[in-house]
Amino acid sequence: MKKFTIKFLLTLLPLFVLVSFFKFYVNPRITGDLGRLGYIPFGKEYVEYISSLAMDGSYVEQFVAKSDKKYKVLTIGDSFSSFGADGYQNYAGKYLNDTLLNLKIYNGADMVSPEQIAIKLLNNGFYERQGIKVVVVESVERHFISRASNLNFTSNVKTDSIPLLYAFKGDPRFIYPMQKNVIKPKTNIFNRIISLYKDSGFCKNSLEGSFSWVRLSCGFDNPICHAKLNGKYFTDDFRDDDLYFYKQDLKFVDYTDTQINLAKSNIKKIKDLFDSKHIKFIYFVPTDKYHAYQDYIVSNPYPRNNLLDKFNEFSNKDYFFYPKQVIDSLIKKGVKDVYKLNDTHWTAKASDVVGLELARRIKLINP
Image (cartoon, rainbow, N blue to C red; front, side, top):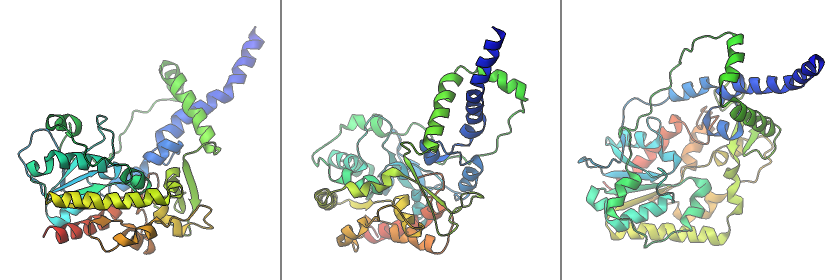
């Protein structure tokens, strides 16, 4: 019995080592949405550095249920519109010398596109009641064609439902606190081993996480793509010339000409609908990370994104903002961390130049 027990424990030893390594080393270092999707331990130091780039001051607030404050500019968007101090709205507000209002749409109650919600609120008369003069609808590049080609222009929303669906429940100032180093009490290895068995979620969470980490590290069904760049574009000791991006950034290859043409037609239709209500409209499409860096990938094995070429008819339209050229101006100069190494989103460096250009457009259409 004793020999069997020893063999059994030795058999489990590799699994125990794997799970312990994942729990104590890999998992605490998983940061950014790319890190979470691909179980990649980018580390917390990079997050702290990126957070430190955000400017001081707040020029963006969230829509709340009860407020007498009036705003001229409203933004409605996906995750690119969900950042605080380092978000594009904060910088646009700085250059406008005005506070922008953001409508946080993904609260779980009305999970439709930013475009569709913008139309609902327009048909409801929400903007007029709020005194809004300019509405910026933001929709990320990988999704904007599917979203803009699938719209209902007669949809509406009940006025009483607006606070329930879209009102922010937290601090309307919308500034994320800077991440600080937290000093944790030291524990010896014996206490750590004991804590494994006290942790009720260890077996399920750590076992599943360990196997997912191994699977994704081996490239099985990994939603994250990786490529080498021709220079050092990120502030990291080991990954400064590595590009990690979301596989859905390659979604452009699936769009048909019919979808693209319908999206273009609908974007114009949204503009006309806003014009009919005497409200200015800007459609803003943040560049996917792959598209931003595709020209800098060594021996690029991925298809080239030429989506911008299909929207040339909008190139001189102030209401259509596709910031690829603005972003590229930074990357060409060798500016590091235009986008986050560990994330699909850009940093405050990009938000600054994007916010400046957005502010310029807002001033043009609403002097």
